[in-house]
Image (cartoon, rainbow, N blue to C red):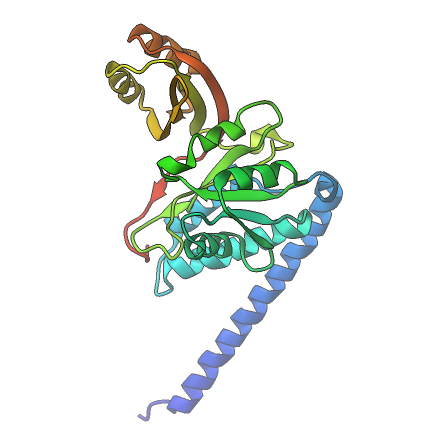
Length: 283
């Protein structure tokens, strides 16, 4: 018996690849037609950003959990991020404003990986400038590093108050060693038209204290809360706190007051999905 000619095998395999490529293109065009119908139903083109962070976090987690095979997870995630962000942009155009005070490269990488190249990228000198740009926009997003450093001051206070921009996501959605856009960043937007689109696994609060007690750290730890950032204020201390969504803010107030550190102010400034981590770049 003779084996099939290698050239015939290659031709058949390449034909299969061509068939799959055409099918993927057909599905993308079909997705576009559905988005056309979605725009007509939701009228998102007239209502600002169509970003839905809760849904996107769930989608990315599902992709990571079911992925297997030769193709690196980095590539799969990047492809889906471009598809999701571009179709979101088609529904309602937006720009991404980035704080580049710690360097442009990591922020540009984050913006391009998570939102693609179709969405305009706008660099700014500080987190405060990003917050101001998003506040003045119709439906833009803003991104900045979680770790701003002490010189940035209490930048999170610019998110406090009705109608102010709020944190709606933490990126990357899928955390892993060597992530190509692994710098942890918050995403902010003006208040979403549909509050149910927000993911509230973690809720963020801007807190002000006239005095701080050592026991307050133990109280936060007991509640599962985290201090994301701190900054000295005239006559006190400002903190950005992350609290599990199941913990009521009044519980936090009462617990801090009981240890002698009652917050003078406690304003909700956003929320995001729980962090999701995988090991390695392949599932």
